[in-house]
Length: 465
Image: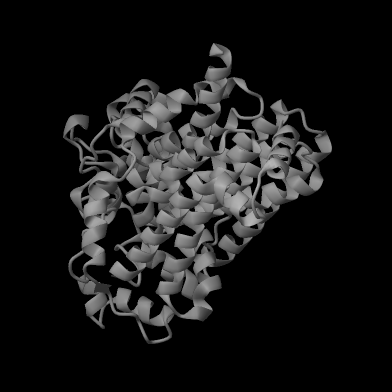
């Protein structure tokens, strides 16, 4: 299939009049126009909000881990860029990664034999979606995670010869994605199933498993050196516990020991979102000894969560389905809170206090990353105002994401492409099942949903013709 597409492209180029540059522009002009628009939007973002949007919470945890060289996937990325001593450089690199994701979608679909105009339309959401653009301007791990996973899946889908060296490259990318965001861990199993169905040689499958396992094992050893626990994170159990607090009823199972402190008497319909249980001052976690986010408390919360899920599987499934449904609504609602949703919009008018106060720990982290010269937060008009207006209309609503997934259903029946819709759906469901729904998590699914829709639409057209 790929060889045939290359041959057709070569014959077309040989017949086309004009210089090679003109032929290249004519063949790819739709995508090049979209690409130019995407690059222009990212330049406006760099000019409109400087140097980067660093919301309270995870952004400063990543900075702290990068400066102390503690184990964290995205913190390792920040550490690599630290010699530049500039968050502007971090924002620029993340915008470049966003552009590369759109280019990968286009190239993959062209190499798969799809018409160039269809491939360009499939890449458009990656390059023009306002929330994707804003995500690239956040000091968060999602853009890096998406590019690593997208590159790995592209290699696996396009490669006819899934030999050991291909497996080495794909395995390194998959393990890096898993270390960047925990949602990547279940996708390692999905990649394994995909390759089994592709019937690759056992040696290649063993190479992939080894290459994926070694970085994870090394990271766990590094994690143990810092925290005394062979793990990849100290929050997975706590996050899962906060998820179960949407339905957990301690009268239906028997929490043991300090797990009893994690119960709540409030009825499920009156409980706040899981984030409030994780971070709120009145959280049951306050009753546990020591630091809230410690290895011991993570283990207690994990055991509680497992008991709750096993005792109430129907309630857990209903909670996951309800949370997943939030991804497919037309309008973006204020969930889990207005403050969180506001973080994903170009709505900042003034610098946060933590940027202004030199006594704040956040300011100290910014100063440490920039070697004592933190870049001042600036909102520059008219660029920032344009971004706000643009974001009102130019994004992919959840209802259209659902349409893309439905169009991608025929791709599920192709041994080579079924991983695309499966990955898109997994990226939406996994965060809901393990912590909570968050709009920014759905953005990682968009490239895979677009590629699945393109393949699915082509399959339906072939059957109808």
